[in-house]
Length: 325
Length: 206
Image (cartoon, rainbow over all chains, first blue to last red; front, side):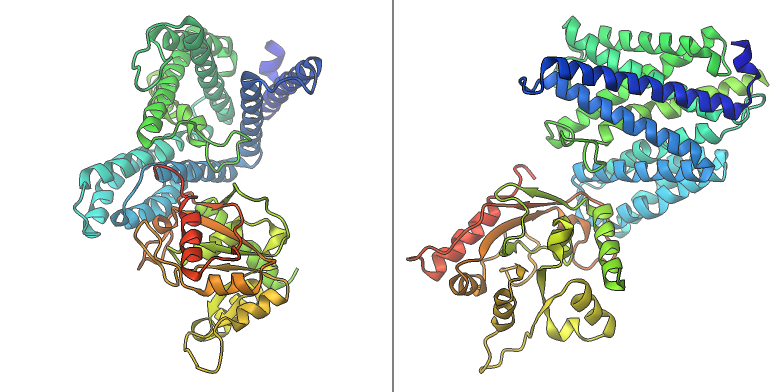
């Protein structure tokens, strides 16, 4: 570990990516070997197909992460902005907006979203954290009222505002982590993003597996038949353990990394749970197309846990650093 | 690559960015057979959406119908419809000595595919209006051409009547099983059958 610390930030990050892609490669090889052993003409297995899809999503995510790092601050922000745009597009498609919402939606897509990411790129973190919750929150109903459609006014505005909060505000915290410079932890933002993504995905995977295997009483049967308190707690626990195991890449001590991991992981799984409720409301049985992550449909449920976890994690980290000063 | 090709790529990229332009080929595969695609008409973007959801190699031979007086009124409009979309021009003024379907028949004789909106005008209610008879006449004249019904979903939300800026919302174009004119079928029952075939493709529960 001592020799690792002696390396520059750039080299450490490079090592991180070598490790990440190495692990993915191993996982893909294992998957390939397993499918070869079963025989190519064996019956197409549901869980096998699911695993394949998850694996390709992981590859896509890792490549995105790498691209974000390679392309620097502007590129990372742009990339996150595009993901945000696609997620918001998907959300609005499901939200059944009306004609009177048109101007409000134009505001959301073509003004709010770019401005939010410009604020990230310009590192204006004070305005960045109040722009959407305060100014946009007030602007959306004004634009909407000007459109002159009083029917279900509050409900429609709430939908747009909520979509912006999750898909734009929540997700914009991921590149913000990359760009936020802490004292004594400069240029290492990629580690924080990596920590966050690892912790959140560990929580999500363990929670889903545990909820399915344990078959405990579901917390809310009408929303998710398997989501249980114990499954959620196990997901949070897994996130905490992964967080603690990764403490050496973060500015935290082991115990703090444990707590941070739990916070981010627990918030992330709750985010996934909320998206299930949304999906039931929109009448969608299954998210997305089964073939691959095309970015058309099925992106939202993959980024939702991150959208919930990123702001919570971001502000916890900021709070931690302001304490240490 | 010519300027028109570049413009075509740019337009289809924008259409994909805004609407996703997903083509769902339920009743027939996307192949280079000569076809008449007929669809519900809700927005100006309908044509662009169908065009963008076609595979690239089919786009050059699949042509829209454009009103001559409007789409040749400026050099840019004319360039766009001629060079990029290869549109078939029809004149909206009826003259007695000319068959309004003649340019369409010429294009079909030439071996091209067409996209037509048999309602004749945009409808912003859920159900399409009754179909005009052009489709029937073309079906009678060209029995070898496949008639493919298409349902375009969600486009009216992207750009409602009277708005200029489109909002990004995912849209789909669902392509159904090809129809053919039956030997003993009269105009009315054929047009009703064609309209029903389009409506049947509408995704359940909006």
